[in-house]
Length: 401
Image (cartoon, rainbow, N blue to C red; front, side, top):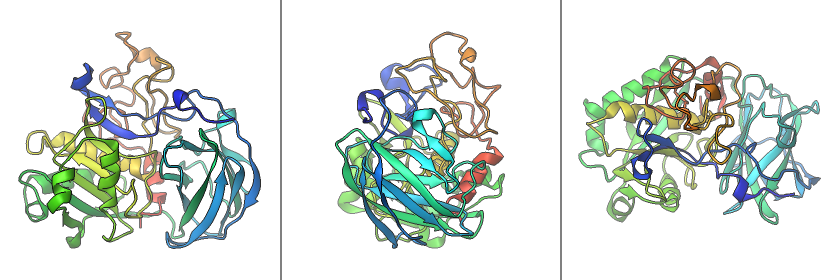
């Protein structure tokens, strides 16, 4: 059986300004983010075996395999902390690692049987699977297997395995790209002032959990000329994909922030920021359609607190975190964005909190639950709290040193 696009929303993590479509709750709406557990026909026709030895860098590809027929086998070496599998070839097809099984034969992800201990969601395009993305999952040495579904007829994909072998990390390096932002470029961003204040406050969110965000001297990069003209205002997901490829040729092993003059998406929404695909991003690999996080700087100097939350929130997605609660709760609207994350220590907002009965959980309605968590779907509560489980996922991402 296949995945069906009519039953799955493409994985895309964003915060949207919702006034364009009549949203009235905190002026913010969530982008198209939906777990693969929300509808759709499941199952898979899995067979074969395509083994691969351990890789230690993005330059050590495991080779190719056939989505929808092959089982991908990944040999995890002793002492590894995590592995990120970066899978390319889906194009416009949906792809989902519908079952992930550890060397002991225990499924940590099993879409057919509602097991999401190591959650991953369906997406199109470049797809990254992080194991573990939950402190309750142990990365056992040995052969892990992954079985895939697609909504297409099957396709050949390539995979790169990026291992983390040095334990939990504590430092993340960045590239900062400035694209068509009035009054802000690489030189002015380095100087003391509002932008440095924003960086300092974002750093404080992560420092509270022992993670240092590092912005090296060579991290400040101007996008100029025709690229600045074209991408100073990003108005489609295709342009977003093109924007992120501009990271190619710049220092790797870093996360790329793109600060742009304005962002709008299909349907009239203004996006506040975007981490493309499903968590996580492609772990420090540059030049791909998902090699970065974008931030809308339209309100720079006027509403910097929101910019701080957007930066910290989208970074959390890029490192592997999901929303604590989606805006339609667990089951308020079967056609909406629903669900919650898979970490045991993150609070979730119950559907019963929908006091006004509009089938949407607002930041105000969830203030006593998870409305103050950084990864709540709306930033309206100036949400900056982070749980130990979320921080452990981030520290275990291979991009964290």
